Image (tube, rainbow, N blue to C red):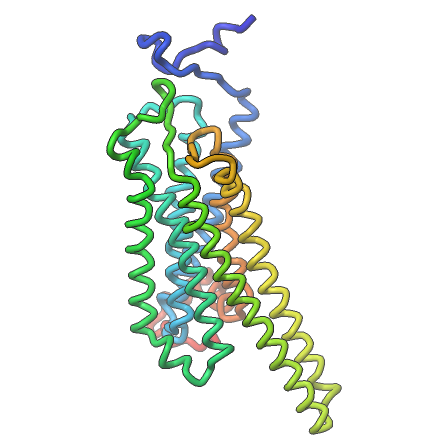
Length: 326
């Protein structure tokens, strides 16, 4: 027999039309709130460090770092806004109305897809840098990279609008009761355009980069042997080769681990219903925004130097943007 607490309604005056409010134990609710808050704060803080570092120091104003900056901005918004709002969706009832329910999902869609498109652009940048280094400065000029970043954000905005169009046209049409926040997207389209095509491009480009990097490392090893410095330099070559393999492996594996659970749901049906029941899976996807600065930036020594200057407030000193951190 259900207790009175278990059948409490979100909107008691609506009777059977209202969703039921099923409360969690206080300890479980507090654990979820603290965990989500800590991850949100960590995500926003790490990506803010990336934004400040690349924006402030003149030496870091390169095409590659512009892509990292765009990636950090999208991930920063995930940590600052998207993750905290997950606390509201964790609650058993949605009290902000059907329109705000749909509008809320705009930002997660835009920022997540922007993160994905930026990762594709970064893979293109690294492919050109390693496979066609002589033409890199021409192909990946700062002006062209800025245009690509702008177009990627515009594309993500348009794509998110198209996915949520039916929900905007009639807010709340997919709710089964009052007090629920559920939207529906075309799972097949989202699976292909939002996951399969981007991840395929990333894997193909990174595999090509890895093959070229290994080939270059072997050529350098042969050259080392020819000049009789094999012992001293081969260690460096092998270390670089292993580091490249490890970095590329982490990039692909972590991305798949964070995105596969969410997009596997799309394989179960044509339409994907997103609501409170899918929050835990969606949060795994959002957690990739916390890992991105670690994967893409913490491997660089310049970032560790810039963190030290930021934390010690040395960036407030005159002419600090000209500091040598490379």
